[in-house]
Image (cartoon, rainbow, N blue to C red):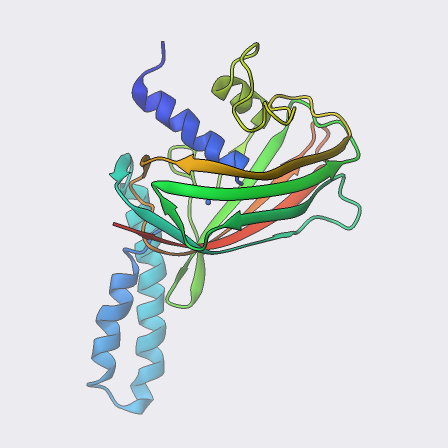
Length: 241
């Protein structure tokens, strides 16, 4: 039997793969050195700014590596949600529409979503997923490393993760079940659509390194032969209490 920690980890990985949504601590270095600018002449400003930015980025990477585990967030808001396909012109899997409201999305709270997409090939195991997660720090996008299988990670088989989340023989969660949408591999060629549906997002545990700021995520689906099946980019801002 898996422990609660392991179940939380698997669920979080599933949310990362399905959504298809970092650190802000290093930016403290940046603000600290900005204060120094007021006491320096113009000739030294450029060097100090570059020094501060460098420390910001290094601080994010180093501190991220040390911040493992989970934390409970009582209230979080996601705003500025945006997405786009980033695959090749003839990518088999394409997301055609995606609508999420309100803006901001509050957790806990209600969210309304609709989506449609298509695939021209059967999507089956092993289905690789390559996630790149970045956070804006001092005007630069910093790649968040893979920690506890979350962040900028590569997953060998998303189909296996779906099987762990929803065991075979168990009905797909609502509203997928109502609309006859599959939640296990293989996914047959064709079009898929989720009509406008309401969801309740409860209080959740999140990685301890997930902090306020602007994020962008890129997810690339790959077939067993290494072929890129599809690519999606998502951007959003996070504010938690």
